[in-house]
Length: 47
Image (cartoon, rainbow, N blue to C red; front, side, top):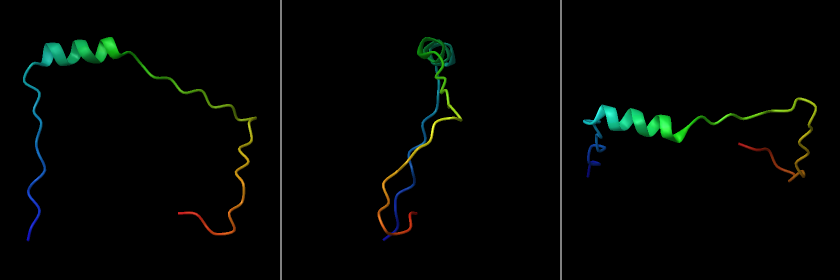
């Protein structure tokens, strides 16, 4: 049995879509290179 095709979402109201993107704002992530992430060892390799 085959899977149904994925739904296609089309933007029809571009002015509203663009206004929503501007309203959402930007997301900025700061990464500190001096910070060390020390995860506890689990004894097995990761993915």
